Image 1: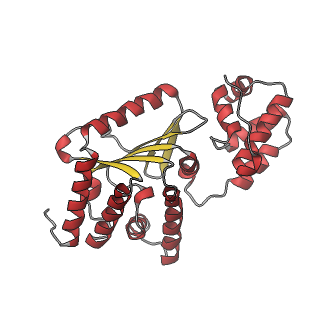
Image 2 (image 1 turned 90 degrees about the vertical axis):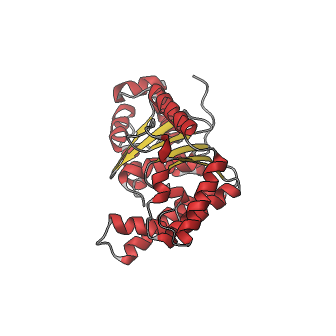
Image 3 (image 1 turned 180 degrees about the horizontal axis):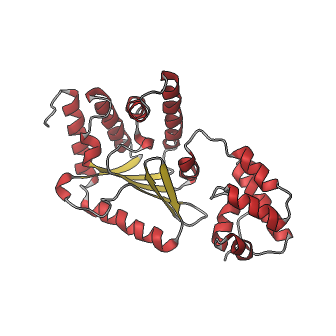
Length: 280
């Protein structure tokens, strides 16, 4: 395994925890694999914790304190850093998303969160939480828009999205909200900020009929996959599984329309929403 890069503990709380973990492990005379063994994780997983790529979970924090004799340090810091604006199942994925150099995302029914407009996001949240107050909905929308600001960087991360045709045909929030959402997506394509393809109904059965798929790549860590369902999500780091999901995304890209044809379809459907052509 190559020597780990030097960390800047001031760069983020997670980097600080990672630097402390590495220091405590080395002080105890353990390799990454030796620390990982009693936790039933790989040495590379410990390396991801130390590099700040992965989020330290409570169960590991407690065990690490016991193994390294750190007197509750990692558990205390976990609890201090655990507060998040995101649902529990999405916290680590959101943080990794912000650190990724490349993201490849397929969604079967929705425009991805990073591409959503406030009106589209508000309609979704109102549907998910019909009894929530207006203030709660506004806070959820603000959090989503804050997350989407990572696209303000002109080049990183590379974002390649495959949208199922169902995502552009289902009028979330009504015709005006859909038209604005699709125009926003098209604008990101025109500005060469994202690569977007539409998987048409005419493609028939495809490799990801079972649900969504998000693949993330990093400068100094192995790629990860995030699979999400209703109020649940799972990060996958097993190399063979991630590679298999990478092939799935490649198959989706091959079955989808070209980026140019996809942009034309997006703009055509947006025009139809704007002009009330419900059967376009």
